[in-house]
Length: 418
Image (cartoon, one colour):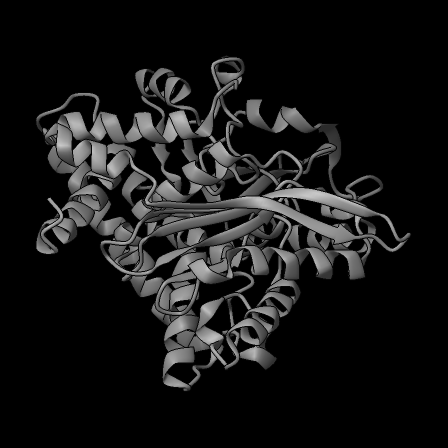
């Protein structure tokens, strides 16, 4: 497989293990996926036929706490991808300082080809496949690519039917009516905007002078664009799988957000010109934000990158080899394991609210999220500065991984596992 995400995830771990001088036993333990549930989901289609879909739930490490991670519905989802994402989740939860390990789930399906009733049957079938492996004290799934609060509601209902009791903390990202948290839908984008603020302060730049281009306009990219636009940044480009919408003077993101939601396309939008979808990667901007899928920036296209800095809002959007090339050009990358942890942070808040049966207002959620994200960025930046004194080519990813891996290792040692 070209740019296998699992190999990328493993390489990133091996790179920091070398710097931290971890022994072979520890490295092997951290590379290991602790549990994998896999199988096929049979779904009865509306026409009476039955179709099967491959599905997985990967559980990487739970030394710090229960496994945590989203469920994605995407036709290109693979076992290797789900395993990689579960490993990245372990580092994310450690970096943001919440008591979780890493998990991830996926179904190889294009949900746009299914009716709503077919999608519900698929969602319930997925939960039946993984039910024994999840629970509020074991593994807490959440939405990811092409899944949402409605799907989490169906999944929670199916899970509670299977176990015969209520357990709202078993899944997060649920509808408010089922114990969901206010602010969860936009949490990843909002958390990323807080990280961008902290990063720009370190660059000693004014927000209005910072140009931003965002690849991907799904849940993460669109809300990130909305928040940074409202915060005074100049968003010059946003893209989806078909087009890049560009205006060098800055886009009116609120209008673009509403237009895309209504028309499912940027075509016809007044206030920006259309470019090919991949053009967003080559724009000369201060901050490029890959917010779509993994491997967006690879050896094949890294030479086209003209951005001064990159902030990763997707999971694994820059391959290790591409990152090495960018580091040699002194392009700073704020890694995914720091930048896009807002979603899992608010999922944690939702879980806490479910366990306590007490709920916070949206303003409280946003304030708690800002505190977590600011603290995580400060810790990573301090580690980056410390590492830079001894390693000329230290990166923010190495700093983030250094903190995360050490935290997980200490938890495993405290348990007597190492």
